[in-house]
Length: 64
Picture 1 (cartoon, rainbow, N blue to C red):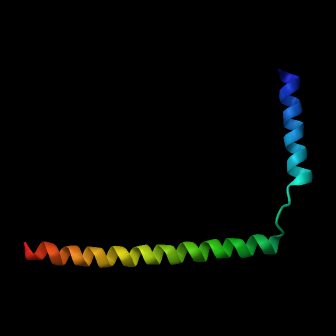
Picture 2: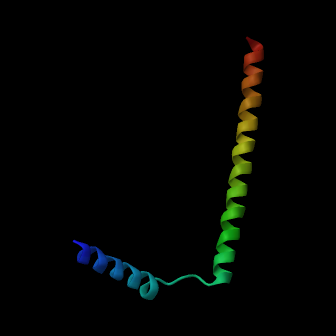
């Protein structure tokens, strides 16, 4: 069992070091910025939708 786990670990480590194509720093930086900008835009959109719906609901509740 121990030899089997050790063999699996060696296979995994070889896979990660030889076959996985890791991004360069500029690629990593650009994708990180894209994710941050996208997340910020999504947060703003959700915030605006929430603001509109809460304003509408306050108007509806004030009628009753």
